[in-house]
Length: 218
Figure 1 (cartoon, helix red, strand yellow):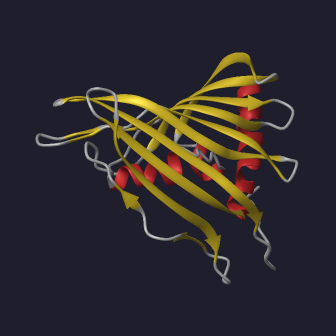
Figure 2 (spheres, rainbow, N blue to C red):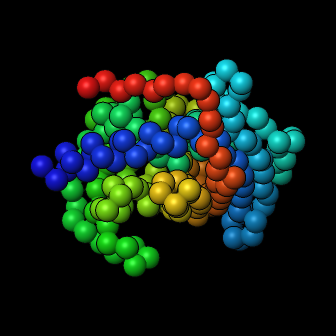
């Protein structure tokens, strides 16, 4: 019963982020076998709204890359957009099985801990597998930890993904939105281990105002 109440109220809170524009600053680093940084990828993009109210993205400047040991794929960029910030709205939450793992204190805040994993993964789908921490008074996610799935293995290539943690902070005094995703992981490729460091910062949250009405099914 408590799990159903958590899921219901959590999805309603998560819906709010859809109404906000924000900036996403991405940095990916790779390392050589000695542990020294070999290169990096950087980009900054704004998630904005057109005058029609349609949500879109705009790159600020040209991405720069000096990566030598990693190649970023379409799946990596999809994860950075949708999985690592982990927005569990009603139209996404049903994709996951959820189990209650008890309570834990995070940065002085007592939280519910839930295990989240995909019910099934369809071809081309990218989903989250891990844990989320929920602040019980507002039913808001304040932290998530896990990885994007599935990993992709073919005869001639591998596409592996790092473990990460996403933390949140308050926006407009009431919503908890992602502020930082960080990951520092060793990916076990067939050709040998490869260290990868990921940093995504989310900033400049601004609510989009339009003369529109949103209705929800009863």
